[in-house]
Amino acid sequence: MPELPEVETVRRGLTPAMVGARFVKVEAHRPDLRRPLPNDFAGRLEGTTVTALKRRAKYLLAELSSGDVLMMHLGMSGSFRVSGEDKAQTPGAFHYPRSEARAHDHVVFHMSSGARIVFNDPRRFGLMLLVPADELAEHPLMKEVGPEPLDRAFDAAALARACAGKATSLKAALSDQKVVAGLGNIYVCEALHRARLSPKRGAATIATKAGAPNERAVALVAAIKAVLKDAIAAGGSSLRNYARTDGELGDFQHRFRVYDREGGACVTPGCTGVVKRIVQNGRSTFFCPKCQR
Ligand SMILES: [Zn+2]
Image (cartoon, rainbow, N blue to C red; front, side, top):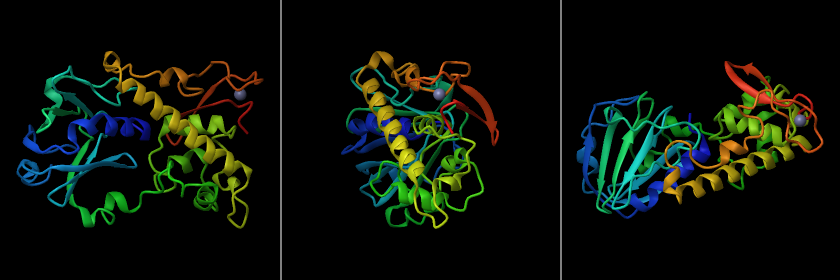
């Protein structure tokens, strides 16, 4: 499933094609994705202009001149293909290969910028909803989403408060969208390795009994921000190189320290450990048992 860096890369890739542009024509090739498309989906979009394209957690939020927000989620397998006068590109597809099979082209936006934006989603866990802008904050999918990890407000104190008293593992807590938005399996594993904290450690151990942050919370927040910034930078560099838009995008996957590296040597300087894979809550966790405590 795409995580925050992929979605942010998609946002940046779509911005030149969408922001300031009008929906000239909208094609919906089926009535639903994960949920039904909004009633009169094409009619409510056509003629409106995208005034801003934002991201919240893993949602893309296109603010429209009509007062609605077009909420979009990539689900498991969704991607956007942008074609204009140049060749097509698929922004943000840098870990998992993305489908280009025409049978899975479900929604097409013809923009006044000249761009044709195709939403392709073989497994159809993606989502497109229209929500009045003033109701967005209270929308059930938005209301409980935790802090944005790259916001200044997400600091050691905030993370410690969210983890204090939790009986779950640190891995489970960081994967919980109410604790912090946008992280998934890959970036949780990578952040824990950078912070040298075991994924099996109890989440509450990053806080004092009173809920204040300890040095583990400080290290973890710094690691989360660093790994996301690095991944977004790698995604951004992939956008500038159309030759790498085939699903093997960007270099970031070659820079994973633990994710998908079972049996590999730990890259922590001076550590002689070997990356191990365990299963937590049904998902693979990769970590170094030697330097992650
Ligand atoms: Zn190690």
